[in-house]
Length: 72
Image (tube, rainbow, N blue to C red; front, side):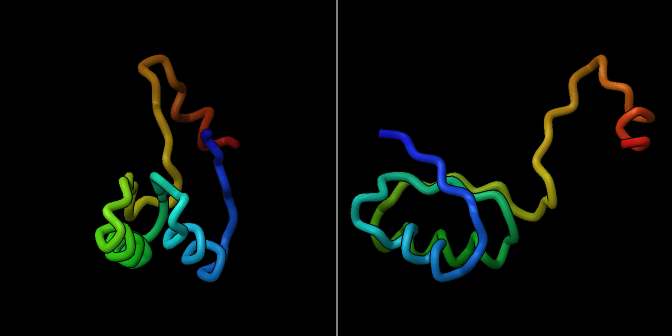
């Protein structure tokens, strides 16, 4: 089964990260929160993917128009 759960809040994130039926955690956000997730995941040997430090993950393709992106 594959579920994507999005949201904010330390309580929700901590509960999901520590849950015994969660086999993998993927997180995009702050380095401080990523470290906390990594500690919990290490204790449980849970697979984890962390994208840390950036505000917004994005893929910019070769034919992108950067000036158009700035206009919104």
